[in-house]
Length: 151
Image (cartoon, one colour):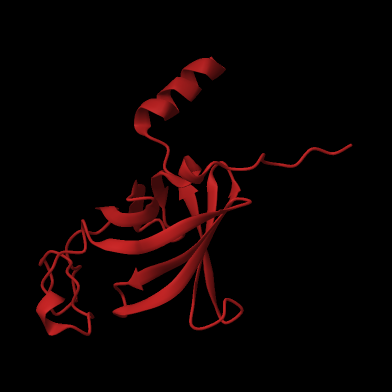
């Protein structure tokens, strides 16, 4: 009899830091008032790069449709909101904000295994959307422990 790859997750199994698919940012997911949210806690490039009209300026929410929010820094920005744990490794009824285009989408997250989170943003129904795969962030001290254990 085959065993499932991963036992059923607890709602808090998603609480941690996650590296985005392109490895350009790290998102910290946390529980707040019984729901789950997330914010950007690390950026590979925290300032606009050479060639950008705002070269050297701290990356900010310049694509936000609300002009009053365009100066807020991306670092620390809440981009995940309102997720509820539905059981079976699924968090749903949330939203994801994409600072690259200033749009907010409905979103669900599925914990594929302990270290893999599938994040699906969509408009209307989940069939029309895009999935990205995030990996659980491995802290440097955890990497050292693993390396020592192999020796």
